[in-house]
Amino acid sequence: MTRILISGGGIGGLALAQALRGAGYEVAVYERDPAPEPRNQGYRIHIDPDGNAALAACLPPDVLDLVRRTSGANGDLVAAYTHRLEQVMAQTFPNTGDEAITCVDRYTFRQALLTGLQDVVRFGRTVTRYEVTGSGRVRVEFAEGGSDEGDLLVGADGVGSAVRKQLVPHATVRDLGVRCLYGRMPLTPDTDRLVPADFDRGFSWVSDDTGYGAGFAPVRFRTPPPTGVADYLMTVLVGTPERLGLGDEELFRAAPQQLWRIAVDATSTWHESVRELIAHADPGSFFPITIRASEPVAAWETGPVTLLGDAIHTMPPTGGVGANTALRDAQTLAAELSAGKPLLEAVAAYERVMLPRGFEVVEGSLRMADQMFGRAVRSQAS
Image 1 (tube, rainbow, N blue to C red):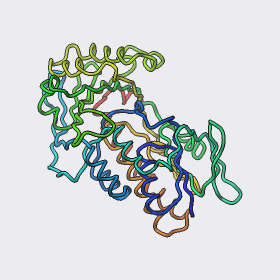
Image 2: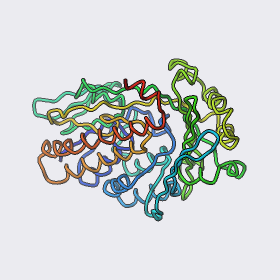
Image 3: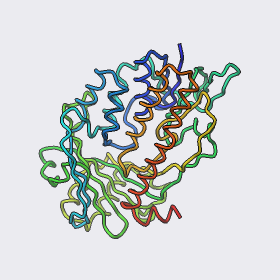
Image 4: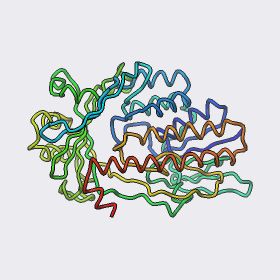
């Protein structure tokens, strides 16, 4: 039986593991996190039609049903506003019906994707390097000691991918010079009244002329998830380190309450309705993220090692398509591997699709980032 090793137990890696397990492959997923607990990557994830199709293709029916039941209520609006709450852009979307998934909570989503993979995912195992053996198989080594061997290694280990650094060492990931302070406001009877009606319909972007922007999006679960996460409004403050007033060393050491205070102060002159959302956010929920984007890389010689998702095409969250692109990668790779082709032929077919598609999506996200973040992105790109 063909044995496939997956480095990284994030969204793309777990979707791939589900698909390959269902197709009869022996799969081992190695995840550096010590346990499947929340990690500081974000809160709400947008799922688009491509992501829905990928989930339907990759997941067994019971897991797909769990993802759908514990997803957020569907929204129909993306809008942009000045800091005075004057609407400058609005795009509405048709009702997608209850079958479609439009948003998920990251932690709840990951927990659902882990369903049935208890004997597949090994937590606390960090892949540091690999070696192609004389027989054409791949041996991986772990930071914690030990090794494992399989017929194919898939690097799904995110923006800092150790697999990418060895496979395509010339690939670069660019810092866009923008930082996000993620937080969330619990939605309770007391705070519900604070949410402007249109903010409750999808994603809302608010910006001023001083270099700050803020995003807001609700997660109202269709059914309460077993993770215990309650309904909330995601809040994200965006600015350059200079505008935030902290260098990265200080920013990433700062306590969540300090980051919340920065967000409160940054929006102190904004419309009262927006100020209230930040002020009532949970001060302990804030953490910083660096916004990065991968530079396009040419195809490499196909072998028993490949890449998926952010490990090869990191993108800013502005297009809302990063997770969807990783899910599409998982769908495409699983389909090629399950088509009865020789292993390397299947991997080559996947890479021919994945590479141009992924970097096209990166470029689209960068265009959106330029519109939303303005001068900060352009100055870093020059």
